[in-house]
Image (cartoon, rainbow, N blue to C red; front, side):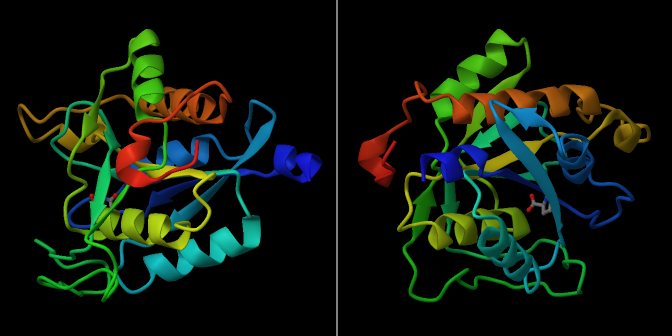
Amino acid sequence: MAHAQSTSPVLLTGFDPFGDETINPSWEAARALHGARIAGHRVIARQLPTSFARAPRVLRAALRELNPVSVICVGQAGGRAQISLERVAINVCAARIPDNDGAQPHEQPVIAGGPDAHFSCLPLQACLSALHAAAIPAEISNSAGTYVCNQVMYVLLHALRARRAIHAGFVHIPFVPAQVLEHRGTPSMALEHSVAALRVIVAATLDPSAVPRSTHVSGCEH
Ligand code: PCA
């Protein structure tokens, strides 16, 4: 079993473009690491649709198929200036704009009857320290919003709630510079920096000495 564990992949997901955008840096960054080996584990990148109906299905299928040792879902957070390590997903879907299927839920639960929130099972402090040591602007965020990213984070942590030893969580990344050419003052981060950030986060997550964050609030076992 130790062998199986050491060869289990890391699953990285990113989203397809949504809203007015023609690219989504989360997918560009995730796919840049597809096939990389980090701390002995292979990275597998999968794209999720920006769709309330379809993203959970694609994610659950990937979890079943790949049995990953660690899962990091990535999304674009236009307007943010730093890498955001999301702390919490809430049981709410409330869309400001329609998703890629035209759906725009208002005040619906992600999972009816589910807990109000799920906390990240990533070692957030270790990830944050490693990012800062690599001179990458990063912060812990206390809201992943109420759109598809929050939904995916909630579904991920709900699906793995009985398997708390798996490091799983969500990271938002800024726009890339090309997306803000015509939006003066909107922050962006070069794709290579976001890719470097994800590499650092995966490595910190796989580091056996990385003791988690607040075990008392989320019940993760690491
Ligand atoms: N960002 C959106 C959904 C897809 C993405 O990349 C969000 O923050 O919810």
